[in-house]
Every structure is written in structure tokens, then in C-alpha cells.
Length: 364
Image 1 (cartoon, helix red, strand yellow):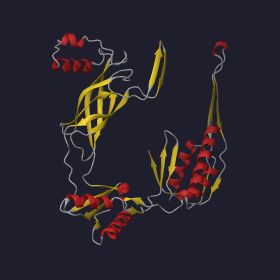
Image 2 (tube, rainbow, N blue to C red):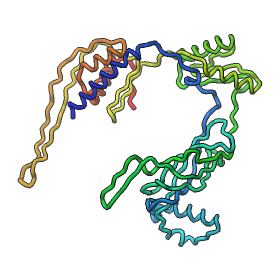
Image 3 (cartoon, rainbow, N blue to C red):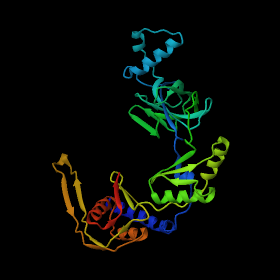
Image 4 (cartoon, rainbow, N blue to C red):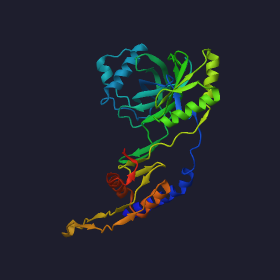
């Protein structure tokens, strides 16, 4: 396993080294619409509780999910079918499942516009494949109804079971209904106040903000844009709505060269993933990292043989790592250590503590 991990890391490092010539090129220009968004123009989250019917004996075990029978009883009473509480609690419906329905209401969405919804089982249903979502109210954070959802659920997974054997491909407890909800209420969206439009960058960067201001002023005229802080840009826009839309359409397609971000190393200890940004640099240092391996031989208890446990500590020789000022040098230096991904996590943390890693180390 250790050899395979080391081989994997060397292959990944070689791939990263091959990509370095591309990473070393000057930053390409990006459109303003890819770097920033207009303040106040945003999506809104919707949620609702619904019932999926028509399942092939893969629904909720209603004795263990009382909310399913309760919702079904309420729905039937609205359709003229009245059940007593005792009758509703004794329902054994294997083709019904209680689900949570979620959707995103886009900015400027108007009544009658279809939006996609995601349907997720919240009980113990084995699968909602082939089911039909009944009319579900989609509510916003204010409790108001903004959309109504209904339709056949599309599930990308498939499964089969027989006795104790079970085979499942992908996920069966969640699906999607393209265009499954219809907007019933729009959310007022104001674009700018007092003649100004505010663009908000996805991340704080004073240099990129200044480049955005320069690009807008160069194209639209001096004084059109001005920086507010490290993330916002105020743009003076026309008062006429038609002229304002055309004006914003031209601005969002302007090209801007973003400033290179912080030197950062992202480490995920759970998966052993290490991702480095272009500006990562290292100082010259010496590293010794031994490898501890534990081998357990279960033996044969029937013959009276106990388990054989061996602990081996390989000698960690001291290796000199040369300083590197660009990503190619950093990848080459770390690759020379021959460490697997898990060892590399410990090495990077030690290098950061020693001051040899010139980058922000973030563990996710």
C-alpha cells in the first residue's frame, strides 16, 4: 500500500510539473461578470415538504415514519377522503415516501417561469425511482409560497436486491425534476440606489479591484467607477432602465487581468489531497522523515497459533531541499523526497512551522 501511495504521488507530481508551463504564463484576462456580481442581484433558496407516490414497494415503512401517514391523511382530507386518526396511523403504504423538495429561485424570476427542483427522501424509503411528486408548496425564508412543484422524479441510480444480496449503482434516495416547479411569486430585485451600481468581487483583493476600476473608466469614461474598499466598486449608471441594462451588459463583458492571489497550500488530511497555488515558494531546508509500518499476521487460532505483530521503523535520512521560487521548483523538490501523500501532509506542516514554507497553510 505504501509503495502504491508513493507511486501515486510521483505520478501526480509529474502531472503537476507538466502543467507548470501553463501556470507560469501571465494571468489571462477574465470578464467582470466572472470576477464580480452586482450587489442585490442574488438567488433565493426555496424548500417544501412533499409526498412521492407510485413507488414499487420501495417507499417508507409508515409505522416508523409517522410524518408520511400524517401528510397523506391531510392530503386525502382536502380531496374529500376523511380518515380517523386511528385509521391514518395504521396505513401500510409501501409505495409512498415523504420527501424534502428544494429549489433555487433565480434573480428576476417571474410568475409562470419553470425552475428545477431536487427531491430527497427524508424517511427510510429504499428508493424513489419511478415515483411522482404530488403538488408541493415551495416556501422561502419568510414563510411565503413562491413556487409549486409537481412531476415525475428522475433518479440517476439503479439497484436490485434478493434476500441478503443487494446491488446499488449511484444514489436512489434523491432525484431531480427538470422544470418541475412553477414560480408563483416574484422577489423584488433592486439594481443600485441613488444612481450607483455596486459590483462585489468574489474575494477580497485590492489589486484586482483597482484593475476593475481602471477597465471600466477606460471603456466608459473617467469617473464612471471608483473603488469603495477591497471588494466593492461603485459604478455611476444611467437612470433610464433600458439604458441601464445596456450599460451593465457592456460593463460585465469587459476584460480584466486579476492580480495573482495569496500563496496558499490546501491540505485535506481525510483524502490525502494537497493543492498548491502558483505563488508558493520554499526556502532551503533539511528534512528527515522516517516511515513507520505495522504488519499484523492473524495466524491460525484453530492450530493454537497467535497473531504475529511486527513494528518496523525505517531509517529517515536527512535530505537537503533546495529553495524554490516557483511552482515547478516546489514540485520538483517535494517529489525528490519520495514521500507518499500522508507523509507529505506532516512534512508541509513541519516546513510551515520552521518558516521554510512561504505560503499560507490551510487544512480543510
